[in-house]
Length: 349
Image (cartoon, rainbow, N blue to C red; front, side, top):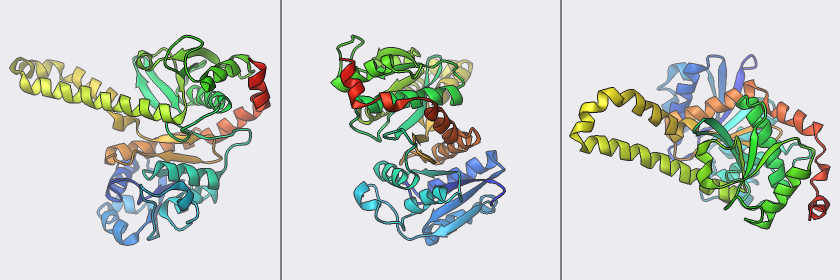
């Protein structure tokens, strides 16, 4: 496996593991013939399913563990157990056996173990969960999506920097427009941390194209390429967006089903409808990464299906091919982040 790009997989993570995990890997493997996988999980549960995919099995190494992280487990508990499928999958990246890890398991646990095992990049105080989402004119980067429920101004400013780097290298945007998610566009709106972060970004040497505040309803309009928020707000915004997307798709289906004229016109509109469905399908944007770590850790939705999990794996593969962790580290080292200190916050007021 040393001659190939290797992805480490928590086979027991997710609501429908290990079946959805294996089925998703089978889809991803068909598109990436140079990829190998190390699977960590209960052999008695994983092997029968893996045996149904002989081509996939050829590029997999299964390492047995009968322990796993459950959805209700607290991060403070799981970091002590090095024998879970999640911990062992992450540790494989630390050891250099794999270039990335993908898990659909407990988000808090994945964050805690990833931070403990992989460590944060020097100068970065906290890692963040980041994902790429669609808007009217293309795609945008959003962070944090749940890793940090409360963030200081310094954290938000660092997220803005890392989001800017991701948008430039993953989306090819030369000068990404960065905005802070807020309840209004006025300067004095929102929590103190958000207002302080705005001042820090404006007064720093990070050379970010900062556009100020953005309200949730503006996100789909494509007015910013990087949306920055604390993890609590970002996670709610993300799930609201996904729920809305599913609602629109369901309403379109029901409207066609209930209308005779719509059924007649369906052949003429099918291409447009399929394009909209593909654009709004949350599964096609599955796979958020923890940015700011010395290793690549990707979180898949726990309730996703095989297609969604394959997208998360493909995202991990794409980021590895782009040497994204090294890129983040190199760009952060170029910038003097010492100015983003508590003293700097006081200086701007």
